[in-house]
Length: 142
Image (cartoon, rainbow, N blue to C red; front, side):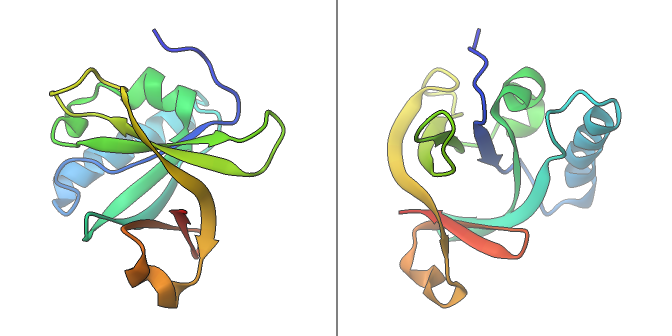
């Protein structure tokens, strides 16, 4: 059982994101949860790069992720997700942590601190191992 955390977020992708039907099922679930007002805020869709591969990404509240998404079938082939935690309880700076989703380790096990979630410029994307584009801005943990 996970502890409720205030102002924590998750960025993740899902299995077979470029198959229309597979992606539609994920987005439909998120849309239904949002329409039923079960989510803290409407998840944000974006795109990211992980290990050099472009993939759709979703940012949502940490508690909502653990309650509704964490053990869903569409995460079976995912290795990790990004957890964003505020540096201070009321701060606006976030620290990024890579969290395990693979079957080799317990779900949610911490794999490592990645750095501070920072807006980066598009021309520097090749300099970063991983990045996410949300709301027209690019971010990475540096």
